[in-house]
Length: 224
Image 1 (tube, helix red, strand yellow):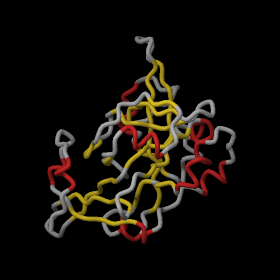
Image 2: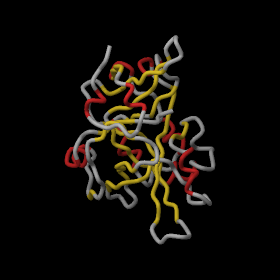
Image 3: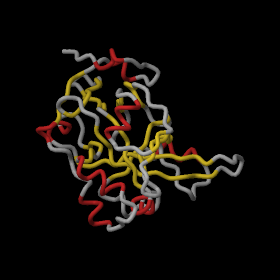
């Protein structure tokens, strides 16, 4: 499961990194992004790459209540093409979710859990493989756009702490993931693999990360 991540590059850097054609998102440094918050998302509904704010927690178009999104922050790569909540989005509504790190909690012998930050070696921006949906509330004229992060089996680095990790797309896979003409499920599933172990690093951070109310660069200070 991926339930918390970081994205602390500015709007210009994100737009440049993902070759965005039009940016309408609020991109500000964030060090403790949590479910149900709005996050910048790159998607290409008509070949143009757009950067917009979507709420994290997928609400399928057929859902009766948006509250279902609280349980839909992740989609498993092994079943994403089969689950009714995700299979249509896999073929028609894929997106990139910019990030530069994520947290998982390591369980200690005394039963306590401590956050660990994972990132690419060097701290570069990357993209989670995501899906998006548009939901219409009968009581509102404004559509709600939401997203989810796809997870896969953990590589060795992440596996020391957790058995799952978010799918981090290789840069050359991002274009294919956004290609609206690509609907071959086997090809798409082939992209949903663990990121190469030797290209990632991890370090323990403050337990202040436990509360989504806490923000700031100090959350990323390594602790022993």
